[in-house]
Amino acid sequence: MSKIVQVDEVEYEEVEWGLTKELIAPQTVGSKKIKVKITEYLPGHTHKLHMHPNQEEVIFVLSGKGIAEIQGERGEIGPGSVVFISAGEPHITSNLSQSESLKAVIIKAPPNDEEVQT
Image (cartoon, rainbow, N blue to C red):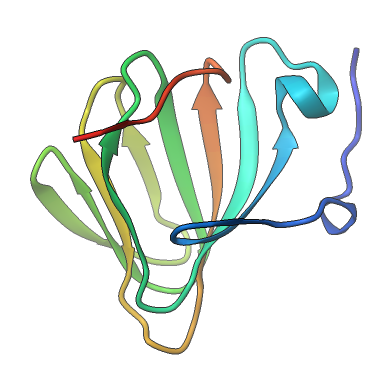
């Protein structure tokens, strides 16, 4: 079933590194093969080293500046950056700013997979 989701109508959920809201997911629209969410990495916060064994991930940065580290390779990210993370690759996302959030659209496929701390 198709559905239009209005971003402003979805509430943020607090997570260790900031705020996130699931827009497209099995529990929100019944998606079976994809998850889309918006995440705000709060100033100075990091999503610790982890991986998703069976899930690919894309991070599309909307605002702010940060670092993406994938399998030990680091790169600066900012508005317009798109990061692809293969299933099973250990990765970290960090917000470099002490005053501004790093805001990104996160796309994951398949939608359900575990997050394993490494």
